[in-house]
Amino acid sequence: MFISDKKYLTRNVAAAVFLLVFALIYEHFSHGVISGYMLGAWLIPLAGSIPYLGSERLHRRHAAENGEQRRAAASGLWQLGIFTLSQGFIMKGVIEIYGTTNRWTVVYVPAAALFFILAAGMAVMKRKES
Image 1 (cartoon, rainbow, N blue to C red):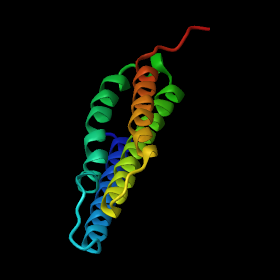
Image 2: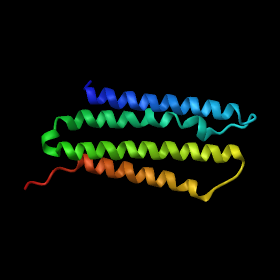
Image 3: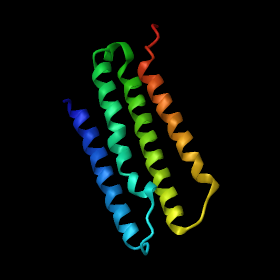
Image 4: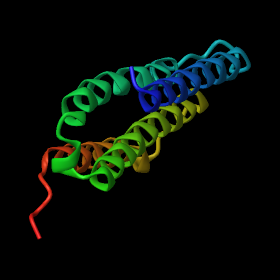
């Protein structure tokens, strides 16, 4: 396992632990109201690490072909997708616990999907020859 993979995994595990603790504390003070979105938000950083680490191993062999900057940009977009989806789950959970609805919470999933698609496309694309 490369050092960058360890850092990536450490960041995502730390984010998952933070989200789990946040959800447990928030729901403790919510007078018995729970939200599946809030409880599931901590799984997103962990689940998002699996495809990233798998694709990183494949693309490290072709680092010269894909370019280091392109790989870093794809990694950043993937992390942004994970963050967006986690944020969306937390917001949906907070609004659900509060007992109301909000039409803007539906924006998070398509935005995260767009970031994931852009990251995957950038990781797969080959650098054009100059």
